[in-house]
Image (cartoon, rainbow, N blue to C red; front, side, top):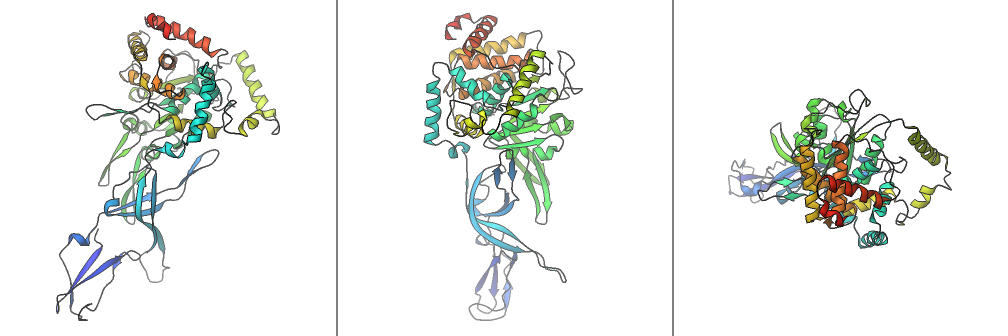
Length: 508
């Protein structure tokens, strides 16, 4: 952009430089030479490098959270010059400082003069690590002390965290475990060719109406340090990815939900209400974690390194048998690491337990509310955790990078081969992506357990979660095990026997 205009005096050849007036977006015209006061001035037609500067306009929004959802404030235009250009991408969290400048619109006779404001940036920095603001030394010590307390029964410590997720929903042990693993995430890697392998798992909830899908999605959006919640009814391909918007200053890109959720979680309720064309737009965002845009002469690649948590109803609105069908295509289904089935089985015993739990919460007085008593001190971790504590914990453990042990590798590899050769397998689910999903889920469970190594228990849990979907099990809404250690040992022995890995039984 040209920021300086030169006027040459015909009499003394003095060069008079005039800077751009940002308020009027024009150059001030001069009538006299600064040196000899002559009026014989001509505009220089040559374009000097010193007269121009790299120029970029961006729009920033301030995000703030309430107890129920996130909001974005009205955007503010920011002007970047010189070395500040291309320092950030849509969806980045940035710190910017500058000067507020008023910009007048075009003046028209008989019309009121209007002005807008923009920020002339002096410095800009990208906040690369979201967890920096959350993981203080005191918080780390608190979480370390918690796991030291449960060092002899770590599964009970894990289940206490799971029970703190959406406590108004009774049971749903597998669903809450899957959601916690997704919130922790896996480890992103870059192979020798430079290709990035995503570490963010995706979760799809398929269930009957009234099974708690939307509540789990809203809780996930509140527990993530960066999140976007939307519904398929009000979303389009441009709304999820990016849109080219034209205004008085020209075309510019506006980031969609997946870009704004970069580094966090994007929750999409009623996913099937979107058109099939709009759903295919998220294929690249879910697997390559980028969004390629070529609109209105603008070619760009935006980051969308987020986990997608979506909820849908089966075809027809309810499950009618053991098999389940959705209107989602196989390429999209294969990108979800986990697909959980939430069935309304109408079991009398289960209905009694659920109704008792709901009535207990509804009838408790505020003064004698067990949940509120536990939440008075958010850092008393021996009871149920508050959402604030869960948010801090998930933000902290996402920075961990657990490494696979040899025993875990054997279990994950054998699980993959078992499902690939299973005659009951679903072809759209048992692709090569299945092994990557198993690795991500095992890493996520290791993070949930606050470890830097992926051990046998993590691999067994990942295999259990994947098997819940691939074998059409309806255990996603089951209650928490009474003795988690005994339950785990029984399931681990059955899995090792099925995979012909009995030599690893001593590692359970």
